[in-house]
Image (cartoon, rainbow, N blue to C red; front, side, top):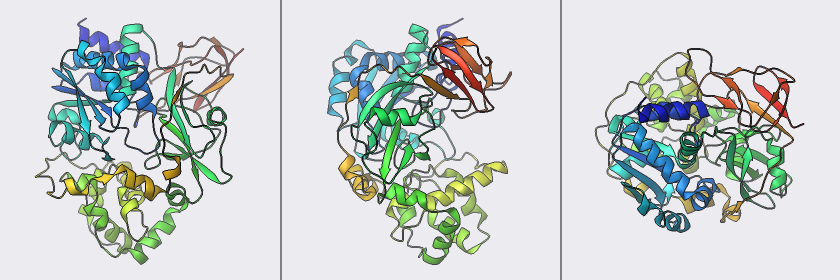
Length: 441
């Protein structure tokens, strides 16, 4: 077996997925041939410091993971794309990068969403990914830096993914970045941060822009980058309270077709045919504009349209609903080349500082340090669907004793998927259609 196949098998066996997004299986990305592997270190969502802490404390592991990904894909070059403002991360990497061949640092401007794959490839390589395309269409593969960390541990150390680096921030008493076992309940993460510092709040899994609302009883998965306490009155709190039927009524009553949502859309500025203002008009008045509706499949759901709309509407959430309806009907947007990017793109990059102020989170936006503490979880709840793919099949039964790192679930036979491993030593306390609970002792 050649080296690339060994790497792919090791990463597949370890259950490595994209650590910062939808959780796409990493071994599938590694199976694509490319010219350049890009390490995504933009971390462009406000309040998140997970990747920054990882780079500062584990630069060698990330660089080795990038080197391994280059070996698997046949890439001749590796690029760590990080924001220029991350000075501590750059210093940490500069002290190590000289020992690794063909790896360079590319500094990004401080704008949102610099971490979007289409945007990042354009910034780093000056190449435009086709609409509905992926980075490999233009000779690139993009991995989150924590994914690269896990790739190194899988291939060099034989370690499966059982832990996750997580930012706990927002309106908490002691914000921190911490490494915890997968399956830890969010209530325990909040306890580590001293608990909420406000009475009325929502919990957001991920960033304030693209993250989803969760309950304290939910658990850490392989894609959990952050747990944020968003106070009442902040924009993410207000926007997530509105029901879809209300959003549709507001769109019909208030959308003035100013097209600011379109003019600020990062995908539109790249040259995509996505025009949110047309979608809003079509949905509001039931117009037969099937092209506009189908173009919603191009939306990355970054949420800038929501932030910039002068009428307080949410094209993002309406696009998201349309996408689900189209996908249920198996309607796809055909891959097609972008003619050219919009000439105004550079001047319309949205500054992160402005975004934080607009979100009403300025008081919570400060540097957060990594807490290198040992977490002895008494119980974990491991979800059988925590990545982009099919639900996993349990390999254990109730009352079985398991060790941390032991394989406990895998994809259905003959189907694409990833492996799931126990994150603590203990006994299987319960199995249902969606999770496996392991209790220590």
